[in-house]
Length: 172
Image (tube, rainbow, N blue to C red; front, top):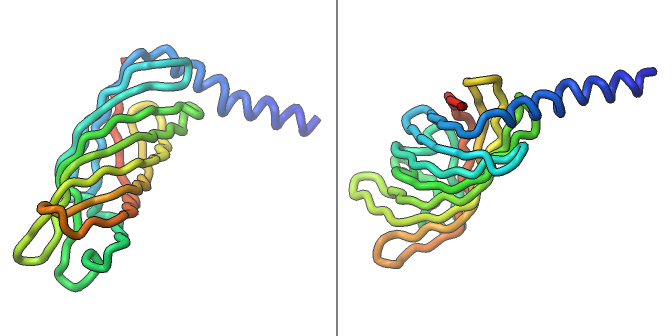
């Protein structure tokens, strides 16, 4: 009998709510962290999957960290390494009504320095699990890729961790 309860509970928590979410054809989201914002649009591609894209601006990750393979980017007092603008393409998987997983590519611009800032382009793959209900979601994001300062110098592999972001979602 306990096995049957586990099966019924799994169906109630995972299968039935995700099937109900399949009724929405499109979604617009606004993602916030401490000082940046991104807006995305996604369209349903299957029963539990959406394809989408978006743009974001603001210094990010303000609540997070960036680690680079080039020592030029090592953390130091009063030295900043932040993303300032990005575009993204992604797939959103609806694992359950309360759990979504975004995965995709992001490209954009970053800044680096203290008083004399420099910067350049970056390209990263990312994964972002979101936990929430209906219109409010929270979650971290993990990105890995490459960045290079303008002029072609100081290229580096990079790992970016956004510890926390919030999302407002509008589905129709």
